[in-house]
Image (cartoon, rainbow, N blue to C red; front, top):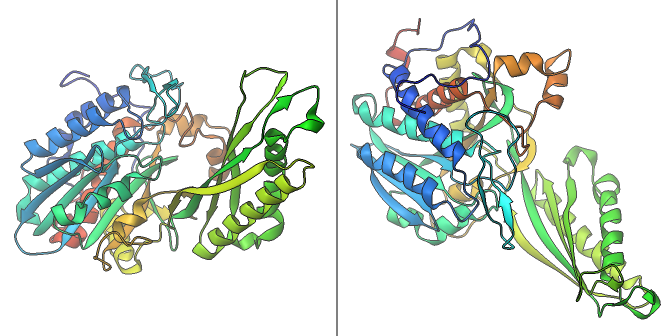
Length: 454
């Protein structure tokens, strides 16, 4: 996109029954913000390989006067801007894309491919909105840096690598993030979701579930497909595990726990990779998601029990091992901070554009940045809050099948879909406003003195 060109839109701008309060200078900021977003969207990078993305983000913050650290915990970016006495507030966004082939049909769609974790070439797409998070974070940082008379304290901005693999927050903390910048008092973050752009959503309890990812390995000696009775068969045991896992959530958990146990991938290894050879190894990845640590612990124990039971049921049992790949805590906002941010959003957007959020079984490593579930730093009093940002444009919302909002939400392309398509203008505008007003709720004078936008 060239300077001054039209920002692409997924549909016409909606009428606003309650105008948002003015943020002077925001309209002029939207064009460079959209240019950054479109560049990031066209050039996504996989977890752990976000060098170009991190460079764009770091360069933007450096130009706005922040002290910027690069390559923190991989390609992580950490920036700091001090403005007198006051609290330290951190705005966090993510750098990485996903191994998804984009199918949106927009002119700025990604055509990038890159080596995946196993070395095979895979397509890459920002299918989860991280490009929008970064662009909103960059815009909010620029707006606040230019208006230091409105706030006091320390503004921190973090571009986190490897969120999709739930390893980036830990890597940054292990690399001394909070020893290399001012430790935050509050950490703020938002995430796009397929509900109407221009709205934000807050939860009364958990926003996102905690999760555990397990790697299950079943190993035998392999053999000839004509003589299966002479071979320990890892594939047969793995198939039994996949079938039995459905019973863990259905039969072993209280439905109120909202436990989800999913076998997400299965790979086999043989000497010749052919149809007449019984695999010598089967590798299975399993995720468990729940809203309490106790429920996650029970799910892990159940998966381990099922794996070993299925292996031992065979006449020639394959060897079975279960290891934890990642574990992330429940995203549970601090009640006082969440209430302050929600009030700031209602004052700015109007109550009609601030809605509730029921909690999602998607998961995040955001809680580690507040110290939840982590012994990596000695700052136990960091508070955090996290809200959802609408990203669906009016035309896309109107075209979605369904007679009501609930039916439309079930049919819209969701995060991680190859057809996930945020409305550029509305998502960036409302996302920047949401971050700015949330930061000002803690850093000093908010924009309440500003007259309503017209």
